[in-house]
Length: 400
Image (tube, rainbow, N blue to C red; front, side, top):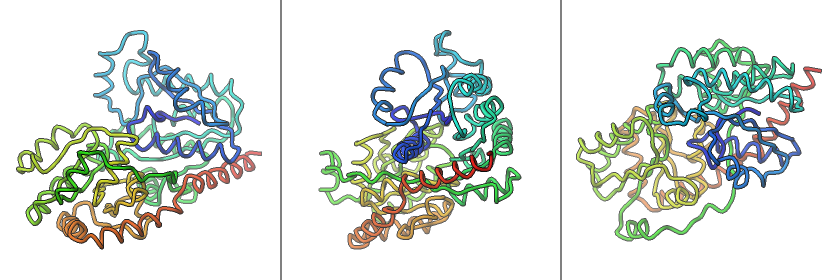
């Protein structure tokens, strides 16, 4: 299996998806060798010990690389200038992708395997090269397309990389029907070649005690509306700010929290300031682990206004904490949830109305939270792993 991030060294949902899926596959007695590009510099020992060593049936291989999730060519050039020469893998982002593919040949020749499973575009070439060496069937798993990440204005090189990987695959897994539709429309793939496997969640104890600062905010009678995600065009943070403005005109006792980082962060901070919302919006930065779960628990409503969201794991995390959600209709997670508020990402008035209704009614908030938590009980990684296992068996049998 080829990927490009894994907790705790993850900056988005892809790493959590790889973790949840591989952990559940291991419980199903599927043996996984996970190939991961990473930096040098002492990370390997901690990385393996903290996260990987306790997952049975999974073996990890690493390739020295600056590749990391959601990177752009511009950001890669910045990292290149700051990185010691002996840690540089390629001269630019696309050179890294090619070099990763070459390393994949060596690994595929050394590691025994029956099927190749590659996650998203940075790994597609590695999967293709592994297939070229071993002759084993290739599955490409699409968690997001370039059309999602750029709100319909794709980088041509990345688009071509995705297209080559999709057309080389023996089977394609899409994380939602929404994503499947994008692949069919923009990449020329027949619908029957694509299997939809929705992401899931591990149902553990999500109910955390609130930290003192958040408890004090709630004690003052304030309502909290939360955004969690990369602060980038795909996730619609600008729409979140516009919605906040409308809500606060009606109810000034609402606090909006934005947790995340990204290339639009400074732009969004300026937008909030220009709209006079400086004391009404808290930028919490990138939060993970227990601290993120406490944020979910503190919120009266979680809002995901994504322009194009292949799935949206954060919506499941919010519901698992008993927090009701408002998600865009342009999201994959909306396909598996019944008790979720839904709006078009561009309909600021509709989103504002729904937020005002929830924060203004404890009964509505509690009912949506309770029903949503039950809703998400069937959306599990065990279910996703079961579907993937069946795909593995089918594709191996076809190859034989």
